[in-house]
Length: 66
Image 1 (spheres, one colour):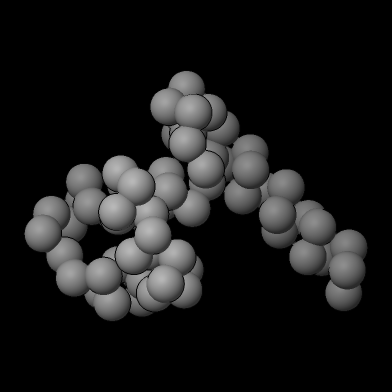
Image 2 (cartoon, one colour):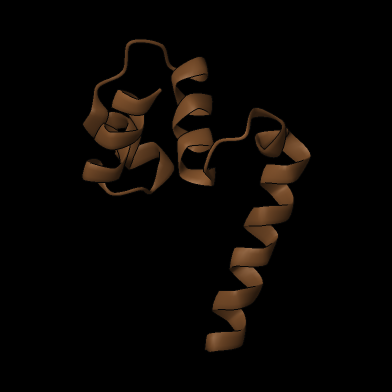
């Protein structure tokens, strides 16, 4: 189970690199929130949390910092 979790994390990192997250110098979670806001402008925090799979508190923090 641990190996599958690590594989999933690594695949997510590779995907974020491919989408340019490291060029913006932001955390992966913030990048997902930023991407979601780009695709769904003026969304509620709860809606972003549902689409990204991130905790609502994490989305709120990311929105404030962005």
